[in-house]
Length: 212
Image 1 (cartoon, rainbow, N blue to C red):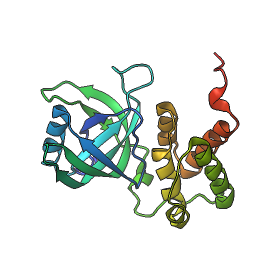
Image 2: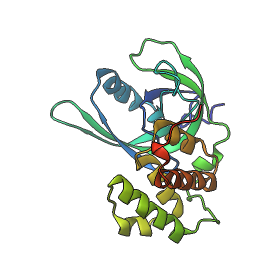
Image 3: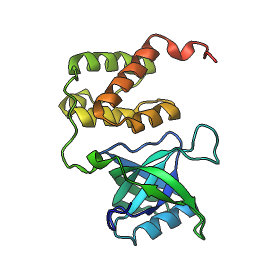
């Protein structure tokens, strides 16, 4: 279903493993492949300036994940060597309906925006059950385990949704874990899952044999 030129039925896709765009976040991208340089050039001519970020499915590179997130190009600069630096601002998640054949060197697909009305709201989503002190303590231990650093002042000052969504995008999680976080319907569900993934890592889960 189309919601006007801002959310069209067909969008250009940028498949990128390990990269997800969460609601009300921004994603910087460096574009250098010719097909994606063409994608950006074409997208800039459209009313919505939307690029659909989507991961290749875990099953294989020839398939795509069921859900992605479209971002609007809100910043654009060209490097001396021809690379492009762009910034995408999340507009809405979408469900992939059908990849469409065509003459472009990049993928285009018919998508459905149904079920993601909350992504279009200007105000950040709230999580009434969020115990921030407990979450931040676990995050600190996780960051230490991974040898990571962060701007703790900015993290503490951010609202709950910005904190959780940014971490879901930036932490060194597996592509399938990032996809699961993207597909969470509510901030509460995403925060609980992220908390569980950090706790699993802290308990040494990454070193355990996978049960078939």
